[in-house]
Image (cartoon, rainbow, N blue to C red; front, side, top):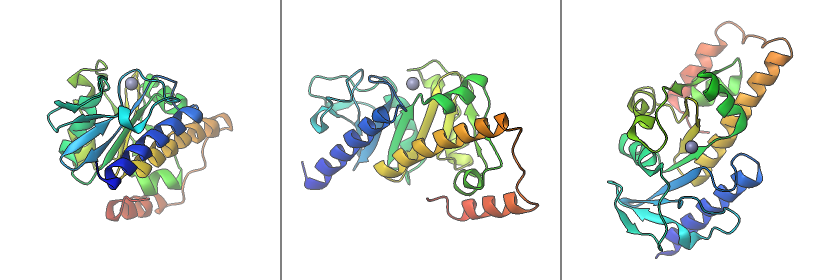
Length: 217
Ligand SMILES: [Zn+2]
């Protein structure tokens, strides 16, 4: 294993644990992956994030075959991650959470929409909500081609389930999972305060235009 591969493994485990420490995911839930050349490093199924080590990550090929596993099973959502890598060569890491505020929108079957400048500038004004698909089956990602490929989204909700966020690297995927959770939370809180103040005329189009030009953070 090269130093770069070891560093990436450490980064995944560190960011995954941080999501747990933030309360974004529970001890055993969620999953995180990153490209490793032609292959993918994937968090194992049902393992304690406090004791997870870089050596516990499972290596899969692009078809989902296990290349090395230390006797652990890859996450049951691995195929969902592989689909994003298939659709978007520019994305290098994927994270799936059940964070509370994003999942509240997913439970309601509602995309996250708000008047937030950040949501427009970095996410094109909306985090869409995919139709329900049974967890662990291909139905979960039936709409990924539409959202990740055609609409160039980097994060989507899974109806009645949770959130999937992706980035060029591990930290960007992590930061997007954090950011979308915060955007969901603030959108809900603003509604409690009596509703959102609309962006000024033309601001939404201007911000979305910038997102189309450069969706990076
Ligand atoms: Zn899940």
